[in-house]
Amino acid sequence: MYDCIIIGGGIAGLTAAIYASRAGLKTVVIEREQTGGQALMADKIENYPGFSGSGYELICKAEEQALSSGAKIIYDNIEDVSLEGSVKTLKGENETHSGKTVIIAVGASHKRAGFQGEEEFFGRGVSVCALCDGAFFEGEDAAVIGGGNTAAEEALYLSGICKKVYILHRRDKLRADFTLRKRLESRENIEILYNTVPIKVKGEESVKALVTNRGELSLKGIFTAVGLSPNTEIFKGKLELDEKGYIKVNNRLETNMEGVYAAGDCRVKDLRQLITAAADGAAAGEEALCTKH
Ligand code: NAP
Image (cartoon, rainbow, N blue to C red; front, side, top):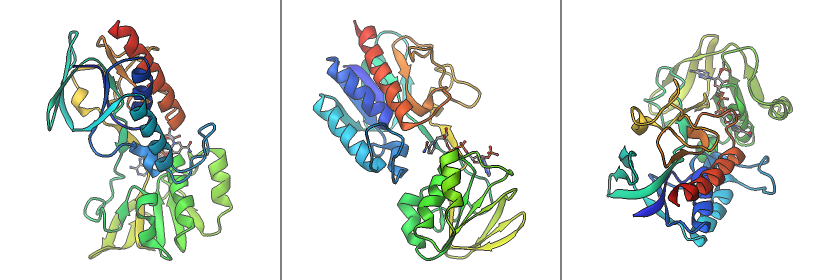
């Protein structure tokens, strides 16, 4: 029986673990794959105060801090939850976990852009992570789909590896912030194609071209960056979610279920950033202490 079970080992979950275990709670982080979440895709973090480095480096440090604070990290995929009453039970693929409080920090996953061949060629030219897969396209042409901060960062990273990088954006204006837009403009091998949507991948073993509403692009890599969707499937019907599936919380990060909190990208919020996820983790870890007593 834990005092505090944290589901998800991204920056929100690891920060919650640091705060909860430093407050003396018997704390566990349950992660389904690899700690780090979306931070692992960040090549260079420039807007986390006092830190400069890759997402991987940040996560290694946060994990080390969580462990040295006394938290435990285990790997299991939570498939079902029972959150009512004073003892919460989480049914994992490997075992069932019980705790007095639960902090949900399950993050969000990449949405699909919806073009023909996106699934079929996934891992064979189509990717959601330039940092992970960009090197496969050294000296080749590639495209990034989307107009937000992620699309801009992916394109900037790829421009250092690829011959040419197209950004395909469905509207006539990028959503990415000012600094990133300026940086995109300064790269000669990045071309932004506005009002352009991908329709179909052409290729056999791997991607050879992308057909769009405005013509065909000959390229080898396609990186989709069209936003996120929360990993909250298992909480449907158990917690209050908004229409997009994000978990509703009050200003103490409490869900509608007593002793259950949500932190980071999986909750309803305005600004989804590493720093706001970490702040959520701190607040939720602290709140868990209040519930336990
Ligand atoms: P986002 O801001 O939601 O942007 C998604 C982009 O994809 C939008 O431009 C959207 O077009 C486009 N899009 C959505 N569905 C599409 C489809 N089916 N086909 C083609 N295009 C589609 O997502 P994000 O860039 O992943 O960012 C998520 C959050 O993380 C944001 O809050 C962002 O600020 C934050 N973030 C911050 C940083 C940073 O601060 N350095 C870095 C990465 C992410 P429309 O514009 O037409 O909607």
